[in-house]
Each structure stands twice: as structure tokens, then as C-alpha cells.
Length: 290
Picture 1 (cartoon, one colour):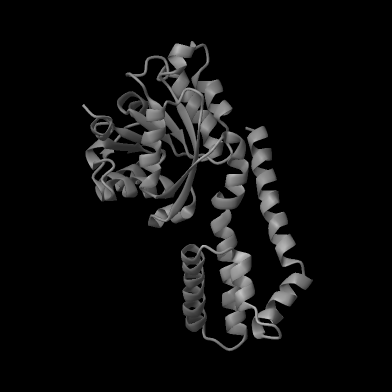
Picture 2: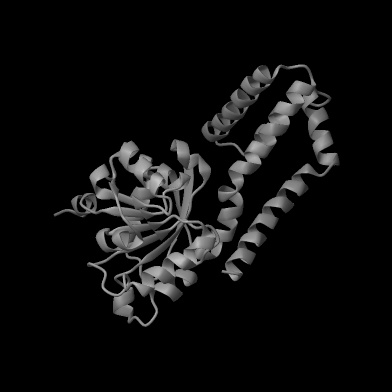
């Protein structure tokens, strides 16, 4: 059996069935990476798990233990503040003691380090036993909801090349994939994890400015979204730096220069950089208080 065929026969289970878990499940089914029959999910709210079953045709799981016991890959998709309870309960029930073969564990909980999971999952285990429970930390972002995500992942020392390939396939169903060392995850969180909010914030400002200068809300939205999409496409296709393209738009004495001068005078770039650095520091702080 080829590695690809072996991967196609794997099952994946989700502990937590919120928006990001739904985005992953929908993407996996849409792209054919997993069939609905090889996907299971459970949630603290039974009606949410039932919704996932009815909407996507996946298997429902009665509880977390069933997901751990039945699935080759387990995605921990609960809120960070709920994770300690989930892991403690799983450890108490012995689900980490005798995994069926290898079991890959993925976490999409922001700010929780690999060490956090290793402490709970690897307690009292030999290296051989740890090798059967590889752990990979994942940082997706909200555009994954529409298949345009940026998903970064950092594996622990027990993740094999096959585990990494499987993770790439899973995350690739939602968009772009970035493999990095865990030391970069705070920066990843600040840039791509929180990044969509910065983009929306700037778009909010453009919309308000458009209305303030005489456009209807509908006109401002259409012009702004078209401009943002066109600018991104130009940046991707021309291969020039953002600074270079900006300078080409900024004619001396023109309208664009008037706006850029205000941005520079009020330190907009420095403010944005400071904000993103603050997000990275906050991510570091959260990981220290797990």
C-alpha cells in the first residue's frame, strides 16, 4: 500500500466543533482529503455535534474518550482555557496509555505550547511510547473559513516526516501552509493569526472615510473591497515590494501623497508595528501562564 493510500484510510476526530473545527471539516470533505465517514466530532454542546453530523454526514462521537479511542488523528479544537480539563480527563480515563498504533495529535488552541501537551500526555512514558503520540501545534487564521487561510504548524520531536506530510494535507485543504519551529509561533500568531483583524480594521477606516467624503455605504464598500483585492493581486503578480508599488502610486504633489504625508506625520507605520509587536508579546505571556 502506498503512503498516499494509507493516509486516505486514516480517520480524524475533532474534540470541539466550533467555527474553526467546522471550517476544517468542511474543507477536508470539499477537497476529498477525508471522506465524511472517516471524520468524527464531539462537542460540549450535544446540539452542535448533532448539527455537524446532519450538515456534513460525519460520524458523531459520544464523548472525548470515544474520539481518542477510535481516531488515528485527533484535533484538539477547544478553547485554550478548556484544554487543561480536556487533557486531565483524557489522562484520567487512560486514553493516552495504549493508543492503537500511532496517534497524531493536533492542537489549534492559541498560545498553548507543545510543552503544555507533552506534560499531560507524556507523563510517565518512555521515548518509545512518546513516539506513538506525536504532537503538532497549529495556528490557523479566520480566512480558513473560506478556504483562503494561512495555517502555520510546529511539530514536536516525535513527529515523523509522515506525520508532517499528513498535517500538510489537512491544513492545505484550508489554504496556505507554513512549517516553522515553535520559537516562531508567537510571531506567527501576531502576523497571520491576528493579521486578518488588522486588515479589517484598515478596511473599516477606508469605509468610514468614504462615507465621510460623500459616498453611500454601499459605494464605499464596493470601492474599498475592489481596491484591496486589486492591490493584493498586483502585489502577488508583479513581484515588487509593497514600498516600491506604493511609491509608483504616490505622485509628487498629488492626492495620494497628501494622505501618505498625514500617515507619516502621525506615525501610522510605527503604530502598526508597535501593535503587532504587542500581539507577539501577549502571545508569549499567554504561553507562560498556561
